[in-house]
Amino acid sequence: MQFLQTILNIIIFLLCLSAVVCIHEAGHLAAAKIFNVYCFEYSIGFGPAIFKHTFKHRKKKKKNEEETNLFTASEATDSAVPEEKEYELGKTQFTIRALPLGGYVAMAGEDGNETPDGKVVPKERCLNGVNHFKQICIMLAGITMNFILALVLLFVTALIPTQVGVFERNDIVLTEDVKYAANTGLKTGDKILYLYQTYHLYDPKTETKVDVEFPLAEDRTELTSYRAFREGTKRESYDDLEKSCISYAVLDVFTWSRRKLFTLPSAFEGKEAISSSYRTITFTYQSASDGSLHENVTSERIPVQADPDFKEEYGFGYFGITCPTITVQNSFGDAIVEAGTNFSRFFVGIYQALGSLFTPDGWRNVGGIVSVYKMTSEGITSGSASYFIMLWGYISVNLGCFNLLPIPGLDGWQTLIALIESVIRKKLPSKFKNISNTVGLVVMMLLAGLLIIKDLFL
Picture 1 (cartoon, rainbow, N blue to C red):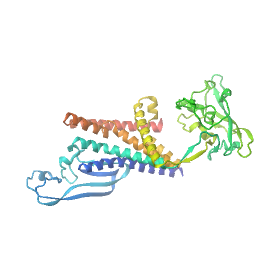
Picture 2 (picture 1 turned 120 degrees about the horizontal axis):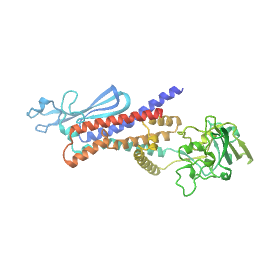
Picture 3 (picture 1 turned 45 degrees about the vertical axis):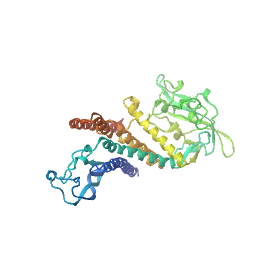
Picture 4 (picture 1 turned 120 degrees about the vertical axis):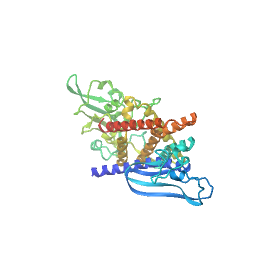
């Protein structure tokens, strides 16, 4: 069953990735057609072709009208005035190929201006033959399509009804797949009034096992909410949580201190979480059925996480409680605003992440194709359409932002070259362009390889 799920995840991932890339390339194709740049082929996927269809456009041509048809080298030297005839304005081959790993559009002037049947495309119909403004529009059209796609997906996400946590209450909702809370007698609607954890750790100085409690006795208070932050804080770490909320009392302190989101209390200094370490939770709750008070201790051993990449928010999943939720539905206008806000947040965040790429934390947080696959798999298994659609909106923003970078081989680089040539009013040497594109391609391939290794083994 797991094998079939993995195969399904891979198929959906490849289809979604191809769709995002092909929409990017469709932007280039559309702009090229608008500016009459000849396009040899628009391909979905790579490798052997499994489907081909050629789209042709024809138009009547009058005598003495300037010849814009494709022509052979011998025809190009013929000064005879062409007879009135139907001539071929252009044709583009639509291809579906075997490997769904993206797509491309081949335009005249990129790698030559000769068609497969030996005809020469006039210079005015080549990418490098149109003016710089048109070149820039064609280069930026793919990025624009990615941003438009992202906005549409984020808008759809904003319109989907979502479950939002009611953090101001401390009612309990038991999760179905975690046993700890359910086995203590807690039921949906009960209220946790007091809670503290006992960490069973190891002290290497004394070579003995020790117990450390959290929150400390002086910090324990009646719990009045599920999650709340102290006023005046930036809410950037769990140090900013109110001590009177369940979110603080049930923190896995080792996990969040390793991720620099929580300051480990002094009582834990010098203590270690080893493979046999665990924690138990002692709590007092009020029954929703009769209002009676009960004090229980979890009988099972809740793991102390040793994985620094553990992402279970607040560690609630291991205890087995979540907060009450309500369904929220945005209006059409609110959905537009939320989509724009999320797009701006993603756009700025991506470039901030790129800016910190060469720092230890930045390199740790960046991911490649394997990370995208993992996120897609999480989105599929979560069963949340909203999360899955927003994820691919984010990936589409990512692709657009990355292509904007002035790195040789990317659209941003081609745009920069066109801008430079328009300012200096002459073309840069072809040798320089070819070498820079080759170097850029090699660098990007090396970076992609490093990210794959990092995602798989580090």
